[in-house]
Image (cartoon, rainbow, N blue to C red):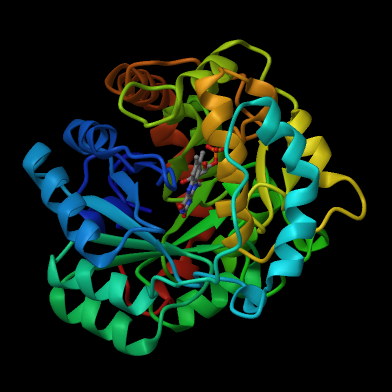
Amino acid sequence: MSSKSSWNQNRLTKLLGIEYPIIQGPLGGLQAQKLAATVSNFGGLGSFGGLSLEPSAISDVIAEIRSLTAKPFALNLWVSMEDEGAFASDEKAFQRALAPLVHHIAGLGGTVPKFKPYSPVKFADQARALIDAKVPVFSFVFGVPPKEILDECRKQGIHTIGVATSVDEARALDEAGVDAIGASGFEAAGHKGAFLDTSPQALMGTFSLVPQIADAVSAPVVAAGGIADARGIVAAMALGAEGVQLGTAFLTCEGSGATATHREALLSGKAARTGLTKGFTGRLARGIRNQLMEDLNQAGSEILPYPLQRYLVRNVSTPAESAHRADLLPMWAGQSANISHYTDATKLMEDLVTDVSAVGDSIVDWTEKRRGGRRAASSGRD
Ligand SMILES: Cc1cc2nc3c(=O)[nH]c(=O)nc-3n(C[C@H](O)[C@H](O)[C@H](O)COP(=O)(O)O)c2cc1C
């Protein structure tokens, strides 16, 4: 290595055209256009989760974020939009899954829902809207998009980031030519995103996942899961990541779309007890442990295929939010929820950048040295 490296100038920042390799992760269905723009305006990469949006709504969101920032930002989609059983799931399954929730809905004064067959939003249509709008960055989870979509992104100059929860998934994304690979450890808030082996036993922590993915792929790696302050960023970079993605730390910031009850729970200092459940949506995800999670995690509880369980649980969460009932609300949170209590995203970014800058360059120098010739021999992505 001849010249000294700078922690915030690497393949990822060059690729995405950003100043700092810090990504505000997509926050699913929580509307967060302003938050995404704030992070992008600072020089990081803001993201917006468009998972359940109709294509026209995706175009609107992209236009809205563009009205708030001229900098790059990401729109995130789920490649796999439903579990196999969603189309065949019938009224009997619906009634069985509803049974443990009925007393909560009644107690909250909500309306007991009726069965409706699943009516899908198609990933290909969502991706079309995003490509037509020439979004700067397209990030995705739960799979590898079809080749035509990735080819079209390359043609339009749209950069892609795919999320992996295992080394095998990272290799699959790398082979498909995805520009950057998210390595998402099981500490992370929200859904696990696995698409090759979805069993809970396959989940890996960020410390094991990041270096193994960094060694296995040629694309730059973005570490996610459990990173909440500069210590986490420095550790991720020492492990071989060229970027980090934080979710929970941004949830408490203004503009995140988290509800008041959720926000209070995260800021209370009592959000350390998180757990994994399929009960909130039908797919494995991490949130604060509460009564609703315990009820739905009971052995024998019927859980509908994704996203039917998500629609079902909304019948509890909507009245629970009105009644300010943290015990009956799905509240996404990662295992490091108690580390960060920022409410201002710009201040969070400022502090992350200041603190990482104190040591970041030496970590990157060390990591670059370790990687040595491996990078030079890689597939010419530098
Ligand atoms: C409420 C919420 C919703 C999320 N939705 C998505 C999503 O739709 N797509 C995605 O790729 N990641 C999603 N994530 C994951 C985050 O973008 C990020 O990778 C993760 O939160 C990082 O781990 P941390 O929470 O420990 O910081 C979500 C996270 C949260 C907190």
